[in-house]
Image (cartoon, rainbow, N blue to C red; front, side, top):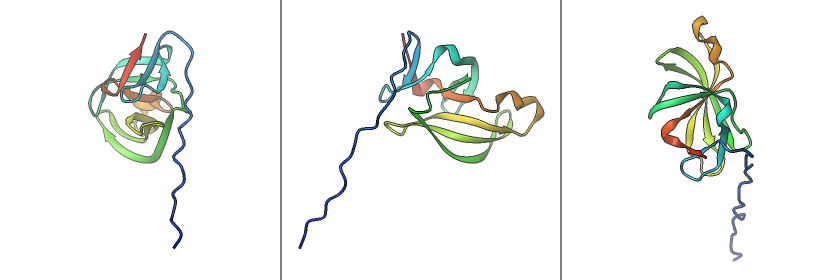
Length: 120
C-alpha cells in the first residue's frame, strides 16, 4: 500500500517595506503599513483603540469576504484584514459606508492598535 504524502508547506513570501516608520503584525512581525498612511488614531476596534489608514501592504495583508457589519458609526460593508503569514485578523477594510456622513471611510483600512506594533 503506497504511503500518502501531503504537499510540502511552503513559506509565505512577504514584502519588507522600506522606511523608518513601519507598522507590523504583532504576532509575526510581517510589515503591514507605513506610518505616513495613518489618517487618524481616534478609532475604535474590536480590541480597543484602532488606527484608520489610507493604505496597507496588500501583498502582506489579505482581504476576507465582504460582510455587512453594524459598527459604532452605523452600518458598513467591510472585509476583514488578515496577516498573510500567521493569519491573525488585524482589522478590516471599509468597502461601503451606508450613511452619508461616513462615506469618507470607503476604501480605507482599520488596523487595531493591540494587533500591530510600531517598528521605529
